[in-house]
Amino acid sequence: MVYIKNIHLEWYRIFLHTAQERNLTKAAQKLHITQPSVSYAIKQIEEALGVVLFQRLSKGVELTDEGRSLLAYVEQSFALLHAAERHAEDLKSLTDGELRIGASDSLIKHLLLPYLNRYHQQYPGIRIRLSHGKTPDLTARLKEGLIDCAIIHLPVEEPQLIVKALVSLQDCFVVGEALRRAGDSPLSAGELNKLPLLLLSAGSSTRQFVERWMAGHGLEVKPDMELGSVELLAEFAELGYGAAFITRSFVEEKVRDGKLFELRLQDELPPRSIGYAVRKERKLSLAAEQFVAMLGEPGRG
Image (cartoon, rainbow, N blue to C red):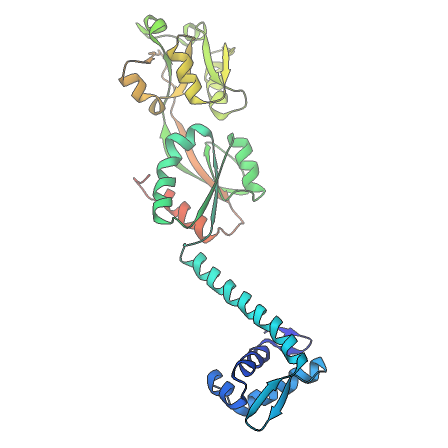
């Protein structure tokens, strides 16, 4: 129950209907209460505010100047409450709301977009706020409550987060026609490292992965080019600038079309896992809850 200056909110509702009906009995009938209850509520408001709100007439009531002044505020207040109730219903039915999600540019395009398309088709009223970043940046934003869900490279060990695997990806090194002969026979890690290497910028999970793989072979990675997107890596590899480290499924069309060529390796690259994370102690909005449920549906995307 809400009280303002010891006035029950329901008394304001009674005042509103009485002002609209200009009759205590009609107001009582509309509110399904007794006429004495209406009289009692009006009396309590008048005593609490110290003003007379209605002038009693032989056939009803009429607002005083003070009553008309109060009515303007009460009407606005109940209009806001009704708007809030309608908004809550819209949120519940997913015809309104907001989804805040983060991922790297490459994962947005090649993994997240099909989910977003399906979600947007089902819930066009939900506003999708999409931000990009590297896995460490996204986990930090998630813990700060700036996003609802993050699509990230695994493993991630964060006690504040719930992390679940989503899909497994296989990486590869690809080259253009100019370096195609380099892949005539399987390459050792050392032979690969002698080629001009095109890698994503330092600090990304993908870059850290290839650095760890090379370090496992006693090698230090010194890329010839550091680029900010998979698209640029593929383009520069196609132009003959070097061997680009890219997730295989992201360039399978170019490989199929003969624009890029995958290098064979003596030691296969291990697969990587992509997952999604949400905050452990944070209740998701209904919009975000539905999207996370969609991510968890097997075989969908």
